[in-house]
Image (cartoon, rainbow, N blue to C red; front, side, top):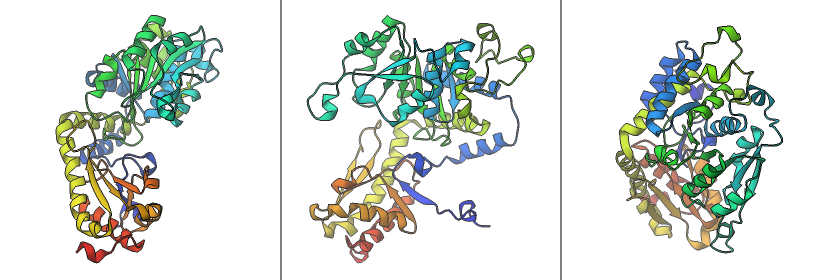
Length: 413
């Protein structure tokens, strides 16, 4: 029988670009796929399943509660909705037309990005704070915590914080400001794994809600994510995502996730209903989370390092005669991802786009990180590759170099 993708006329690829959604994120491990297949064949109460997930996520993150979402963006949407409504069923029913007197989320200007549309979809209005001189190349300053504090008004509902290396102000300073004002902090940590310590770090630093992607380095289903944090906010988020087309007098939600007495009764379908997650994704995410923690940063880093070193070893002889430089990065930091960069000679860097297109058109098709291609740099990342893929990726790259006139296959023999 033909491969499942062949049956639909779709080519598979070797993904050396990383966990990009447009490239279907990372392949799930066999244990995750098996768990999802088993889950698919049975029926469960979705709220009960999410309650069980909450307990496991809380144990892994140090949060009071957790929830499996249909991705990090979905976690941001329902997390923002929770910050806007609390446990008010009336406010839930009003989203995304949130109460006009309290719908603003403060966000540092340098942290704005395309993904904050998820917060705006919930009904929030983003208010930018600070001048990102360092990002603009105009200086060394970014926003300071006092600027967030001074921007708080009676219309402020929460603070949105985008976690990344070097984010400013530090999260501890932001949460201190938020605590003083009685505001929740929603952290976008979608791509902040590894290291595994980041699962607990943001909660430990005072975040009220944290969103992680499940389909990146965590190794869960591509359409999965985690929202973790304060129990009341996770409850509010769950209530705005779950199917609540139920009779009030027959509604018996799981106490581990929803305090019926605190909410009074089921609200109407919430703004998060459009982001529903399946039982398969929930089970797959939980298995992937367990595997991620059991493997550990050291073993995972060693596995990734071996893949990029294998690519480099098979490429070296073929690229050296043509002035193409190879460099390995992130080999010693287990919190970083090992990667390989290929840099074209200065007079040929304008052909990087041609090389990328040739690689993607090859058989097999190979996709690489394109972010620095205008400087003639292609980057190979290992997270979506398997041991043994290195030689195949290298051979396809050498063939593309030959096809574009940047190298020749004989030089690699």
